[in-house]
Length: 307
Image (cartoon, rainbow, N blue to C red):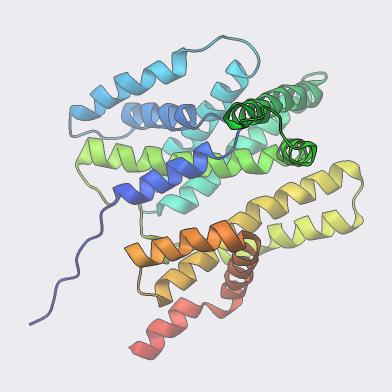
């Protein structure tokens, strides 16, 4: 008698993606989830009324907040991405989530670059606004750490290191914004499929994560710009490396998860401990595995051998 494989719960994947979206201070995770979800409910089929109730709750995240600084810019970005995603879903509903999400971010980025470039001083203003938000985020974290200290003072080396991290975040905010948007789109898509259709499997398991192999040239192009470009080109190259490097590290983690038989409580605990004590080594290792999988396709080879 053939054993039917047990379906994994989908909500842990959405929860993990939401934590990823929240990890970047240059963006608002709730907004990046709320706007795409509202456009999905408005433009795609809905079979359950509960989807509209969740939409009404999330709408509060869109309209609240002081209308200054990045209020309009971040909502405009979220609308661009959501519009592209709904359009691609209607055009090619059979395509998987990740190709549509990557296409949506690419399309929205192209429109945003043109819109900002056409505005006099647009790039400088956007850089300044992002810098103010990121520095304020890190300053709040340092203040919280100071209050937890009994002596009420932090090490100058720690303060310098934290502000160095903040400046690095500002330098690569286009890449981190794109990564946060991808993660938030995943949350919004899972929520839409769950609420509108009652299906918990809107997102595939980590071990099946992969993307078009041709995207490796974006990573290669980023390395080339880093080596030979001027200041602006080097920044573009750095952002390309950060964005694709994160995707390839996740692809490497997917390969490891595939050969490890999926996720388990012990595996999650070991992963957490590894990230705490050996994060750089684990990320570099996952990146190498992910890049190698572009040419070797390790999972396909393993399936062919077991077949």
